[in-house]
Image (cartoon, rainbow, N blue to C red):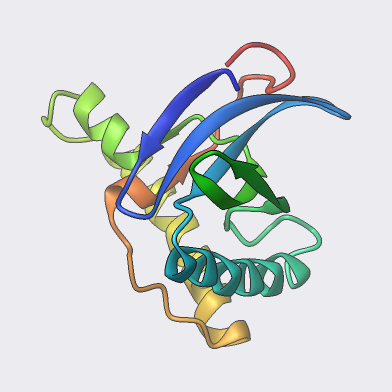
Length: 148
């Protein structure tokens, strides 16, 4: 693991340098309590459904690459491996010192969010119930095979 990306009530996310293929990924490690593990398995089912319908990678939704269980002295943790996305909208808002984001950038972000939501709602009948700036991830033009 390279660094901690963030944490929440249910999990912690880390950046990890994967070797095959060589790239960075984000690994979300769920807390070990049974109800957290069950929630993670439900999330994995939904994320697989999302990925299965986006084979061309054009739907502006995060990609679940893999998942596994890790046993530690603290219990068994469900781990989800995602594509590495550099930052989220909240980080950008803070970077801009809460003074607003340039309108062309706002339009581009909104366009991509709406593409993703339209895909979830119309094609999969999934309603995103936790839409907030920290859950809107931004794609970087940096080559992820190098250090982020």
